[in-house]
Length: 218
Image 1: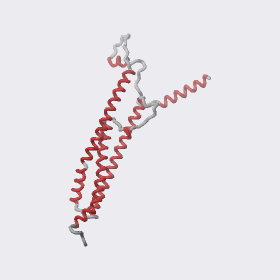
Image 2: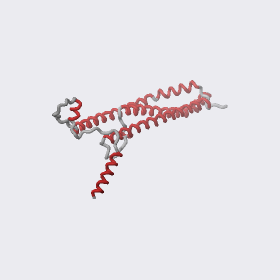
Image 3: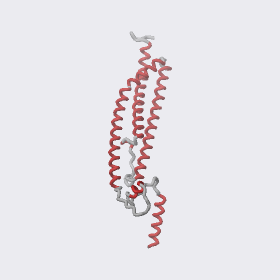
Image 4: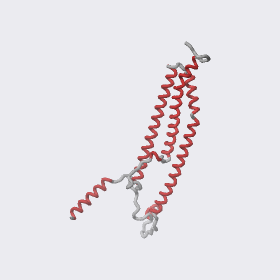
């Protein structure tokens, strides 16, 4: 077999291995980015934050009601879980591709296992800087979402306090009321707890009875 001057068998193997190395680096770069995104989304879910791209829109007629807010919160939590699950699936796919290319380097090009492992370790270390940049960028995004959440919570608290002005309670009965009972009565007679589940069947039944009475009145 003829070789160019100064070129060894190892050099030729190394040249043939370069496309595999480039592909491994590309796949591990994607894995690094997705792992940082997984960490970001998990942190968002822990603090009840939703990135703009994953926000869920609900009908304007119910978006300000307690039911609408619960529906939005549950829907967005499901979207976040699905996004995290999809990223884990992508990472698993990358692991499979990298493992396949390492096998090809060993069997097809007869590269030593130690050299393959050292090359992968070198690639992972070289990607740390880009992973750190991605982490910083996502941290800034998280901090921005956190600030928006805190501002919104203050606004909602102010609206709630305005909408539930306390009144003076005069106890004209002989019964002694507890502090909790006095605080509840101070909210007024129109104050009520929001039901956990919207009583749709009861509303439909009441509407049907009302329509029936109107017809009977005619």
